[in-house]
Length: 134
Image (cartoon, helix red, strand yellow):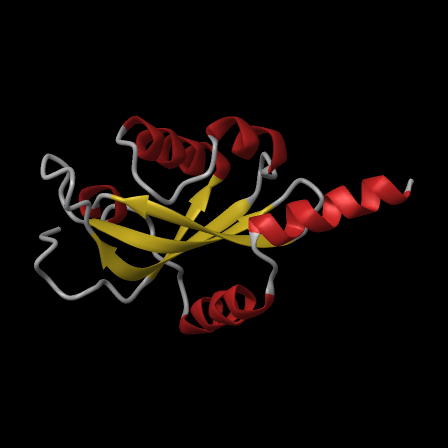
C-alpha cells in the first residue's frame, strides 16, 4: 500500500497472536503509539478478536528512515471479556493484508464500541483504584 494514497477506510479484524506480532514490530521500529507486548500477552484474551481502524497518517520527521505509518484505533478484547481502546502505529504494508470485517453491521458495531469503551489508560486507572479499595 502506498502511503500517498487516501487513508484506508476499512476495519480489520485480528487474533491475539497477530496483534502481538504487530505490537512487537511497532516496538522494534520505535513507533510512537503502541502497547508493551508483555502487557498485551498478559491482558489480551488469548482467543480474543481485536479490531483496527485506520484513523490518520503519521510520520516521524526526525526519523526519515521510517516511512509514514497508519495510526490505528485498536479495539482490544481483554481476558475478562471487557474491551478497551488503544492506538497502534503500523506500516501500511502491515495493515493492507489483514482480513477485513465481513459485514457493514460488524464495522458499525466496532465503530460504536470504539466511541464508548475506556482507553487502556482509563481501564488501568480504574483497576488500580479498585485494587486500592480491597
